[in-house]
Image (cartoon, rainbow, N blue to C red; front, side, top):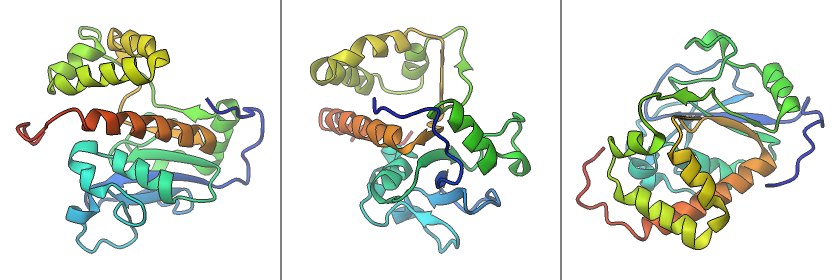
Length: 213
């Protein structure tokens, strides 16, 4: 991973937290911190005002039906410049210190700065499944083939991550929902890895007969 001085101050630096949505929804009021982004904009855009669109600039908006909010992450990676930290939340899942779904208590810039002084990456609390492992939870809701291909891609091209992948698949808890706030060097390295892996997986599977879900 990129080396970042965790003790360096983030006060006064530019932080952007994308709020992914596929339709017009209420958004946090702090427009300096929060950036609403319409995902799958090639199909979903209906003239909404005040939203960034994931089909501007270098983008993979057309992949949204399969890549979900990752199209917003890709857009930020390729087009969001001069920022010191990048985050992603959802219109109905946001970070707060009060553990409530309330737009009035979402994380403020000062709170984000304070958290980033402690660690360069902020994640939601782990979600516990207790009965199921992460792997069984996935295979009960999705086709198994892509997961098997993913493991093979890691084994062949990124072997140092294979043991971590297997360990995660056998756990009963994980940080879910593609939610995070990262200092930019970590965000860039994360994106380089994720989209490199997914492009390899995508080339090896045929989803033409999969259900829409």
